[in-house]
Length: 363
View 1 (cartoon, rainbow, N blue to C red):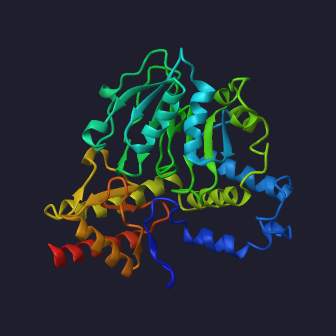
View 2 (view 1 turned 135 degrees about the vertical axis):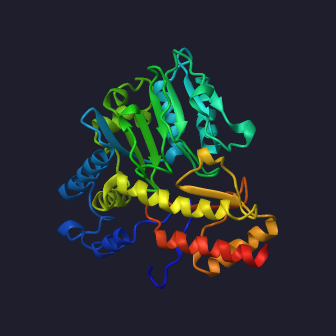
């Protein structure tokens, strides 16, 4: 780690690979020999077009997807997608079916419910969102327009470790906080979206990876910028895109490829998560994990301490040790360590050692 940088455990905007940051820094003033910064270059320039095409190709390679899928770069974060999905795909006759596993899954459902086109297929809210609803808990209407999942729950520290069987109903997923963190059968999903600021880049661009057949189905009555069809036909260039953000997503995707792809990311992420959960489980209750073990996230490790006073002390002392962003979400409190692809094992090891030291001094 660089001497003037901390280990950044923030959930998003989150840590980015240091080699990517240095590469972007080195070419910041002259993008691909254009004599312009990526912040200045036209999105119609050949240099920009080549970069965007490469980013899309690398993402599809990582996901093992073919020409029947398309990659879109959009804006507005996952929160805008919450509304666009029911607007484009659901009706009062064929509603979207939502599995509620956390705050963002709830927010997605509320947009569909507001439009009168959403139903709840399952929920773990009554249990405090400590587990991911399993297959036998799902009640999916046969005529549903789609099944919607939030694949990793950043606030509660839970994550899907299976792909639900939907009996032919299209499967949609918000993968904002675990996108490209492990191999999955991505062909099982019809529509995937992700705010990239957690695991893939800076805030400001939303990645959509979906079957072209779905992207072509936008209702004619929708405003132009609300139609996925618009972004498909115009190659995400109908209006000026967030060029720098897309450029960074492309660099992160290429970094994942050169580091060994999704199998290597999964290996690293499991090793990091096992280390932190091991400290929690061995703490004799001093650290209390929020998520049930079978639903634990490899991206966001959430836990509480014996008191809020100790939690405040933990945050302050952690930062003094160069460990930033460990405070939990304001709605649930406690601690949260986000250990995305770019977080090094060295950083997680330092946090684990600090946790053991803190427990010894405060138990």
